[in-house]
Image 1 (spheres, helix red, strand yellow):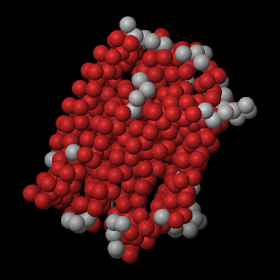
Image 2 (cartoon, one colour):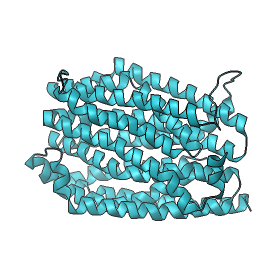
Image 3 (cartoon, helix red, strand yellow):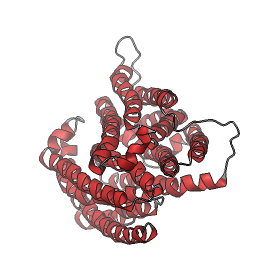
Image 4 (cartoon, helix red, strand yellow):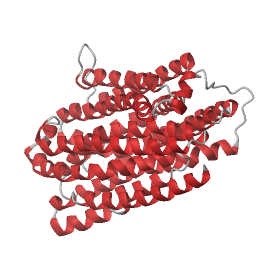
Length: 449
């Protein structure tokens, strides 16, 4: 139990880094292959890049359900390990695996029945519609790979084995990076599959990551045993998983809604604006992956110490991740501020895209600082067993405040004014998160006194 016990005894800054850095690395690599996908797809045509941007909002929803379910399982398993309820931890893991498989089937059906209709909601251009349908259908029909991969990564993280989780995720990411140009352009004797090749490379990577996660779990994860012998699907386990997982799903789903509605707004200006926003969102995700890695690495630490009733370690963990997150956000903001043109050039950006994108990146990047603090407060509350703070803060950041401000500023000042809406939305979300953090700390001090 040495690996599991470190969450209760190791100094917090070192513990947070040891838990988070492997997750950060794996998530950066995973985000990198989304960026590389777009770089190679952009070389097909700008229409192909626009199509991939439209399909990406559906992929975000897929990832939201997979990650949300995994986060719920992670929090429940970690909390039960912290309370030394080992049999209940095994039961929670088995319940999570069943829920993961059932969730993935919904996206398989979507891929079979609804891909063309979804892309058709955003464009009537037949070229963009065909590209988007092809790409999305492949990614959805074989979606079970990303669900299983995410599940095994979260089970490894729940016991403190973030390095194993990193390795499993990197197997998929590196596979995708290697296969992208081969399958898109037809190198080494393979047929040139175009945008379908990008989707196939993604799917192969996801399934290999799932296989690697399964093998690492079986080899190293002795604290949690996945078995259905004598298993009962208990209502309390499902509710406990989705008490954290459902708000996390909804939280990440707001990203899908935001991207979809932003695309609807931006396409009124030009398809180039949609293509730019797709590029921006993947660049922003690349920056935010270390933040998500930091939050996910701290989540089992907070859950474990909440189960062990150690208030001091919970509070120190929250302070530590807020400080680290601000440093990461500042570095990212400076990169976007200083090198916006170079970032866009990597995607074969036209002059029209750079005219829209360079000032947009410089404006939006200021909002990364308040966003980083809001995200850490949300992850802290998920570790305490409640995802509602994360849900509400994300709703403010990405929909409730952001989209009305985008519409208003777009009408008043055109496309150049739209990007200031991110400042307003992030400021409102931060104010809400700080208020809830203050209330939660008071409750913890009373509960664990």
